[in-house]
Image 1 (cartoon, one colour):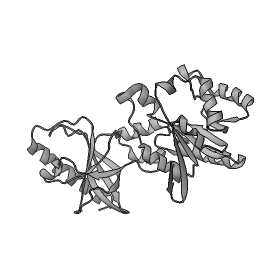
Image 2 (tube, rainbow, N blue to C red):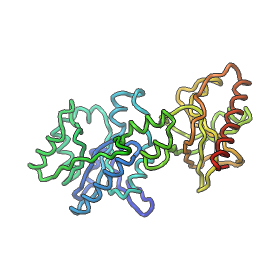
Image 3 (cartoon, rainbow, N blue to C red):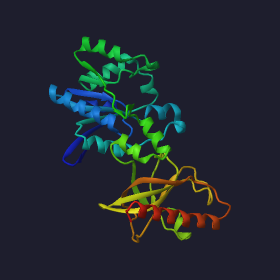
Image 4 (cartoon, helix red, strand yellow):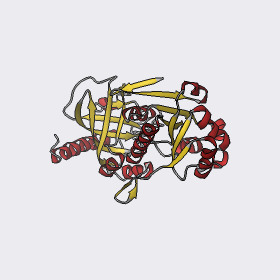
Length: 320
């Protein structure tokens, strides 16, 4: 499978049994790359430079589900980015190959030696860029030193992954989630290298907002869990146009609890049909936490207040 975007082509290989489509030596890095933040981007640039210097293809190995999701299930941290958007970002970054392995019992029980064999014989890795705390194989028995020793025997080199600091603090997916939960969207954008956004298609919902007098665009999240909940001032981008809006991420407790949070956006100064359109929602400011009101009338009053608050906030930002 291949995807092309902005003139770049990315080959996507799913599963160990499709490794036969790799027919060139590679420079390889391995990780979750959740959010593809500034630290990740530095690693990708180092990877491309190493590949170019050695005449190799640049390759990234990721896992689905992510290891934390496999071990912790619903208790795992929410993702910063969907797989689809992650692959698009890899493509935009100029990476040649992404290897997506299913993290399951079979992979979990793979020995460290067997995992190294996959890297050498399946992906033809000649150069690895790995964090010095990287662990792999059954019971996490493989480490950076083991890869270095194996490299000396099997003709590949191992490079330690650099860390990227902002304001003397290491950039990580965890630190970005923390910034988002604390509603520090400017900080999150600084660490990500771009504003935090959720991308998805507008779908038909239960029409609850429309029935209450506040039509909303329902963004299809499928299985994606947004790392934040509450009411927010947002912008929504569609067809290269940007609209201001008020968004709710949550389970709508007043009108009937949902099993999973949904994202609904009420657009200011907009009337039109955008069902089926792919949109991106950028979070600007948190208004309040989601709460359960005593009745529908109270909910409606609070929605009016939220929308008025958001409208005034955008005016104060000189962005009406």
